[in-house]
Length: 181
Image (cartoon, rainbow, N blue to C red; front, top):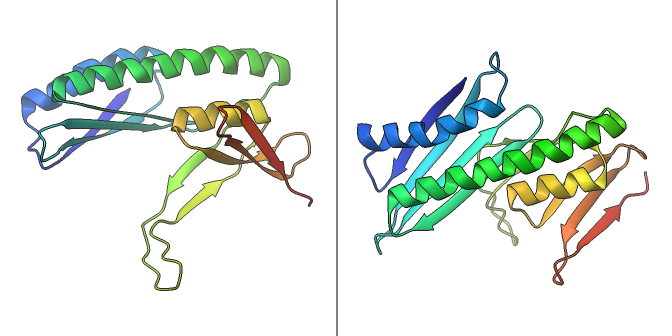
């Protein structure tokens, strides 16, 4: 069952807007198990130039689905985000099913947001995150990195049990950094 946490920045979340978000994201429910409570965190923003940004994050036990879209119309942004999320889920399910048949792995990275702390120093750290490293292979780490729209991803290599990092190179390909432990 998909639950919704809808909040607005510089916009009042009306019942009509909330209903539209729920209607569009309800299509994703068919991809989740019925006994699983899934919360969709939806953030609606309106900027001074009247553009509308929609961010949706759906944390799951085995991955984090995330999409965002900015257009000149809030409803169009909601439509685009829901389509992006559905494409992500279909792409991910195909790869996970294939991987799990090959290796039996189904435990993936979950990023746990931590309250931001402000530290005063020569280097101003403006955000702090704690990650729970899950065993996976580099292909799965790249998939997770792409779904989160990040440029790098830290994970535990399932074969070596060492900490590794995959990253997107400037040429569009990927790099892998392995640690000696």
